[in-house]
Structure formats: C-alpha cells, structure tokens
Image (cartoon, rainbow, N blue to C red):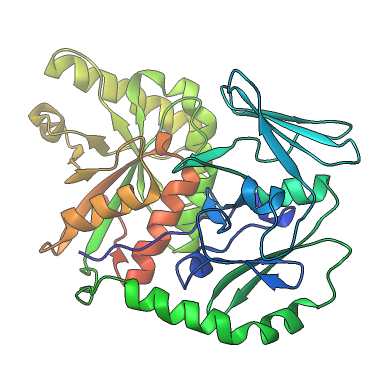
Length: 359
C-alpha cells in the first residue's frame, strides 16, 4: 500500500524559517560553520523535528575544523536546565523538565523545547542564532539540505560556499545513497469512489473541513445529534450554505424513541434552514419504514490520529472496493481532514454527490 507524506501548511512559516519536508528526505543534512563544511557526525549534524531545524549544542560550543561560534553550554547540577551563553553575558536557559525556555533580555525562544537523542542535546537553530547574533541561512542543494551558521569572520556568500564545497557534498551524498536499503517500487494507491459523511456537534468548528471539501469540489452529508439541533444552528446554517446535505444522528434507547428524536430534530432543522432532512446515521428499520435514508459508514475516520494514519485508514478500506461510504469526525481537526481529502483527490480517487434518491 502506498504511503505518502502529507505536508500541512503552517502559519508560522510566514515568520520563521522551517525545513521543507522534501529537502529533509533528499539527502544528508549538511552544516556549514562560517566558510567550513562541518563533518557529518552526531556532534554536528542538524535534525528536523515538527518542521523545525535543531542543531547539536556541541556544534556551537566546541571548535570544529578550526571554527568556534562562541556559544558555550552547560548543564545544571540537578540536570534540569541546559544553559547556553557567550562571553558578552547573553544567556539562554532551556528547562528540560517542562519544555520551557527563557532568554535574558529577550522573548522566549520558539520553539522552546530541547530534543535529546543518543546523549546529544539539540536546540532550535534559528532561535539560538537570532539571540546570539549569528547569521542563519538554509539552502536546499542538489545533495541535501544545508544549514549555514555564520559570525563576523565568514567571508563567502552562500552560493560561493556551496560551489567551493560541492565536491565534498557530492561525495557524502553518494555515500548516503549507498547506505540506503534497497526497496521494492511502491505500488500506486488504489483508486475508488466515495460518499462522504461528516459528524458534527455543538462547539465543533467545521470551517477548515468545509474549506477542504470546497477545494476538491466535494459535498457531504453532515450529521448532527438529533437532541442538540438547536445548539448546532450555526453549524447547520454554515453546512447548508456550503452546499452540503443535512442528516441526523438518532438518540434514544428504543427504536420508537430514536424515530421520535429524528422527527423532532428534522422539524427544527427545517425551521433553521427550510430544508427537509431525510438522511439518518444508522440502520434502524423503523426509520427506514418511516421514509428516512439510513446512512451507515463503511469506514469511520477516528477523532484523533496523524494525517498519515487517517489517510492510510481510508486507503486500506477502499482497496478492492468500487464505492465506499466514509464518515469523517469533525473533532479530528479540519486542517488534518482537509489534507487527507486533498491527498485522496491527488491520488485520483473521486467523490460522489450524496442525493436523497441514492447513495
């Protein structure tokens, strides 16, 4: 089964530089200190986490290939605080127990947490460079991503630096490729058609999800709890205004009670948007006998999980099926669900229009 990385747009990318996911996977991560290409080792190689670039504190606080960036580090006796400082009196504290940080005379760094891997401490590169007055640049090269940190002693521009170190970067890139395990070509994702349902509730913001549906020109049946239609009036108006059909989730311990809840909920929906409701979530025969269209999902998307997990769940269910019904839980996060739907559309999967006459 094909797995794809679904990249989510992050608003912070407009403010601070992040590491592009495509570059992260294209080769080794290089570090330039002034005009020197640092060796590839756990003491010097940057990493990416959560879209941010982190650098080992040892890369800043030790002399590497004759270069020292002038940022020293230490750990308090109780091993609870990592301290970065320079000889000018600047000091940045990373509190390891609660993931917070402070900077003397400046705002706290973003992000504030420290990553520890294989005994090495990694700190957010951009925030540290900005605070201690070091130059920071990120380049996507043909051999892999390059993070360059500079002080006043740097002489080369970034293009000159890459050109002068191209042979060494190419050699490391070839060694990186040779180290990769041999894998079978990925199979293309299965293509299938789907009807979409959305489970809404009072207090759940569905705007991002509706925007995602609009971007792929898909419509859905949006189901609201029959007993709380009045509390969902704004979401119902929004859903109807975006061209989606309304549905209800029955409530009650008996078939008769569930039918009554749907009838009462449908009356309220009609008063709110002047639209009749015929879709109901479930398989109650009494509801079908009353003329409602019982909509049962073949696959329900969980209210939590990464975008990759949500995507894989849908694709796994859609394999070897022609038409499927997918129920999205609005609590999963509109941005996550929108990214999943966008990826499915890019795969060539199609979205069917729900109608009262068929589904």
